[in-house]
Amino acid sequence: MSDEILTLYTAQTQTVLDVIERDGYSRVKRAYIQQKYAGQAWVFQQAYSFFAQYAPRYVTPPEGAESGIWCYKDWRWAVTGAGCSLLELAVPADQAVLFDSRVWNRMLNLEFIGADSAEEDAFEQRITNMGMKSTAEAFTTSFYPTVKREILQSWQRLFGSAEGCPDTYVEAGLWELRREWIVSVRQG
Image (cartoon, rainbow, N blue to C red; front, side, top):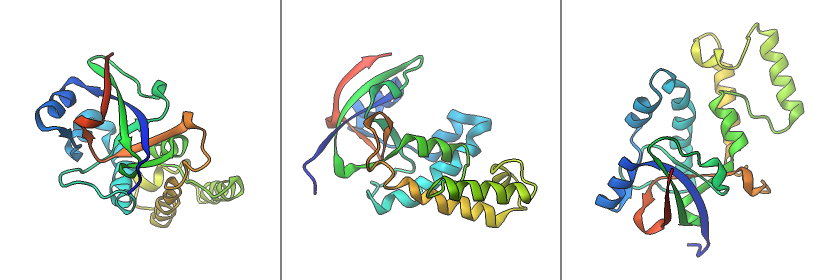
């Protein structure tokens, strides 16, 4: 077990803060994602499901945790909207799955993550030759199961992507928020 503590930031609603106050922790249920994103939830569910399937290889989730909670090393990425607060956290490093937020955002766009630009260009050319307008078609139709499988496999590159990444782009997935990790709460 590492003694390293990470300073991370996340934006959370008052409902989440109330749960933490009451229970000592908060964990995400997949149903919350459906509620939050409604008609666009299926897109988020692709990346979130991938994370939930593979992140336990790096950090074991506690019982009841069904999805990640997104935190950032750079507080400016933890956008607080109406009814949200900015939380500064002190999290044991062994409780966080770190990754490059730019890779994560590409996953949210259902993109292929190549080992380098040459691999990405070759993949892009291949799907163009197949008549695909975008990689999203692999997820919205049943015509491209091999392409979908390749995209999902490429997402393994998320893990380890924080290595050498500038702190401004380091994102963390946590399985829970614990009361004892909260250093400060700033109303949004």
